[in-house]
Length: 137
Length: 137
DNA sequence: CTATAATTGCAACATAATTGCATTATAACA
DNA sequence: TGTTATAATGCAATTATGTTGCAATTATAG
Image (tube, rainbow over all chains, first blue to last red; front, side, top):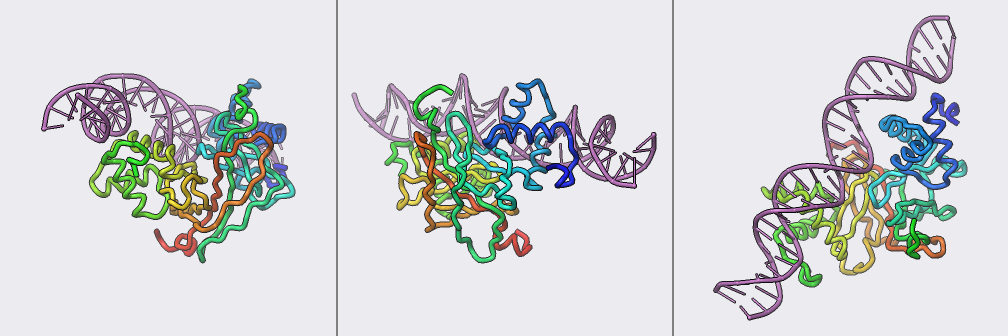
């Protein structure tokens, strides 16, 4: 996967890809850092930022910004190659978890003439089933 | 307007509401601060955060988060009272300006059973007509 | 095995946003 | 109009997110 994009195969890059494919949900920089820390790994903060940034550039992952202002990253589905995370996402205001609302298309949006559209994101927010029923996280 | 929500009528609150109704576009905390500074006013940063926060709570404004991670605020249109900024927004990656794509509805999005939806936002990003043609800002 | 260029790790910086608390000013009411 | 309760402000300090520059390191091509 890394080789395909002619990127060097490094420990952190492999770990991040493993992690993102285990979880099926978008993860933020700090969530990834915490998850790795829980396994005794302590990668450099900045390197992780850069790792996620290049993954996003070559479209191995797509990036979604939450209503909390935090960027989250999700493995790009093979079927969606070339279109940045082409489905809505849900963000729980309480537990902060984001999930993909797959298999639903993003709508066409009309923009003023001359506008160059690079992508779009549809974010639904509220309380996830767990948090809505008052169960603890 | 403030009285309706039983909020105290203070200088900053009035100025922010004036500013947001003059401009028809969403403005970020720092854009508002700059705009006020340009008129010789230097309100407290924190107070402005809190002002925007209460405006958002009582739905005088709606809040949109950009792909740059920054929150922007826009006067709630009277016709849309109760539904948080019910139209898409466009954010220019280069000049950072956000605009409303009014008169276009947000689509219905199916969510897992038990989910409590509080709102949704559809953000289109890319280059605005000015920036797309290479003209300076 | 070596060279080179990509990648990392670190320090410093920038910006967005929040919290606590003492002070001030708004608006209700005497 | 004056007094008062409390909402709102101003300030200091802190947290979180994200970026930049650069020297040291390491993956890979040859």
